[in-house]
Image (cartoon, rainbow, N blue to C red; front, side):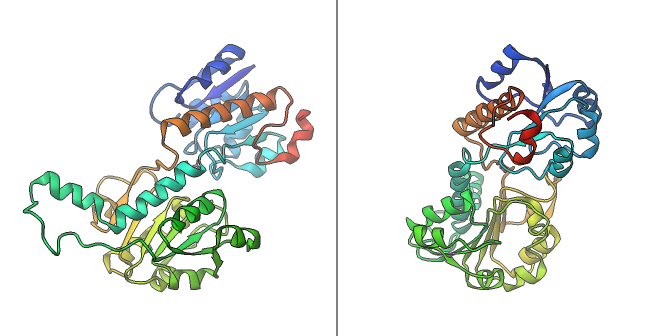
Length: 326
Ligand code: DGY
């Protein structure tokens, strides 16, 4: 059986694929071009891809024998899951394993933006540091403030747990209320507008869906406190980029710290890369050695399980499993 893998992955997990299958590996450190992917996928039974590979209808249809698309990510908005399901192709992902690592990054971004860490490093490095000064790089307190989490899934809950250590009041908004979690981790539900009005920090951990796309635009940003900080570790398209640039320029909010942006990557000179009150990192939510290796192990195992007729640990469209004997 042929397997297409769209990038080298950390750790040894890919060796298992090389031992079992005929593997085509895209070795360059840039995304595989669509035409190469479409050609290679023609005879493939499995595809192991990244969150920035667009697996649309055309790519899926090029994979005439395709049985499984294993995404090396928790999110799967890069895949036309509906079409894969129509074609009986299993789509798998790797949630769970990256929860804590991504929650760590969300907190790191909150702290870095609030305490102006990046600006501080710049001042120290550039030699413009003239000694301790009462008004040098004043930021915002984190302790005891109100944190509003948009999307209380695995990552959102892990962020809420960390906030307890900072004595924060935690609010959340999600499509469905989660009374069990409210009791378990002590979070309070708010509708989106109330959460935006009350929070000192708004952290987006939601996944990209038709409902969440563009959820934070001008109206929503104008509702936030002028002292508030917006953090996004969900998906870039949840926030309207132009509206955010305007909000930061005109100081409707105090700062934004983003692991995800729309588009990705931002081109050199993009306003979000130029403004002091915008802190952008290049989608590194899950980027620890340990997590990226575990993600590779699970993505490989998901793929093999489907091909060998077992139920994989994580499946996005379980309804297709009947077709593949899972
Ligand atoms: C994912 O896996 O969806 C995350 O965005 C990776 O950081």
